[in-house]
Image (cartoon, rainbow, N blue to C red; front, side, top):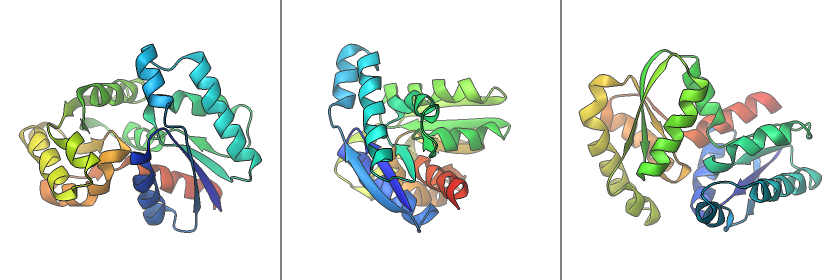
Length: 212
């Protein structure tokens, strides 16, 4: 089965592939990339209607090209997935939609980790919108962005662990807020002794459930 992954940065391609390999190994990933989606949204102060239409056009291209499902790997464009589902019959999901749905079925407190303050805060805000009964803490991990960009996974694990450890007593679950930091989810869980959710893995499992 073909899963089209719409990327706004090259940094999300490998994490999406890793998530599919673990959570939906039968899937054949087809990557589409518009590497100006994030920079133009940042310059405009957020996703604009024109940028949303551009994402919808990419989704339409994927569906017309034979994709059995579409995954948007950029969290900023997650709301477009809902719009696309109104016009396409194939599953279309946002980057962290499946992970948030899993958290919403729980109770207690969770810690959202990001490589940047803005990314962590955005993920926490969107999670609160769908998980009313969950206490959400957000935290940026100093050094995580540089480690992820360099694909230095030991340094990334160290950076995330240092940030999370002081708050582990207040959270039962750790969420990784970006695809770029998700490759170390298993190592981080082992280091912390706490469950760690990876958005691309949760998305892959949700797509597998929807398609098989």
